[in-house]
Length: 68
Image 1 (cartoon, rainbow, N blue to C red):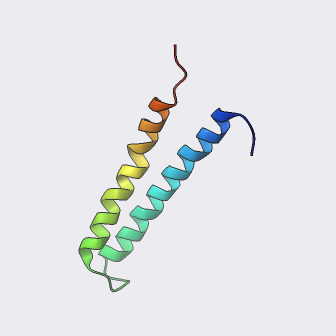
Image 2: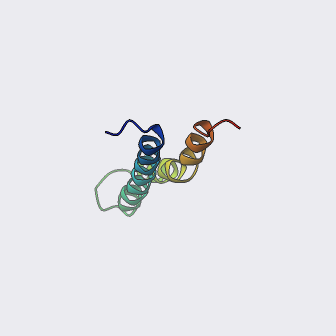
């Protein structure tokens, strides 16, 4: 990997977003009853995935912001 911390942080933020979207999709499949798991498991994954896709990247970006 590159020694540039901004590049590495960008890829970490994108990976968190991608994982969140993947969780939402998996949660939708489970909530639809296609995998034989309880429906509530799907809803938990949907909620957690939405948090991972929308909130956590903003928190990380704010935390890693360059000081003024």
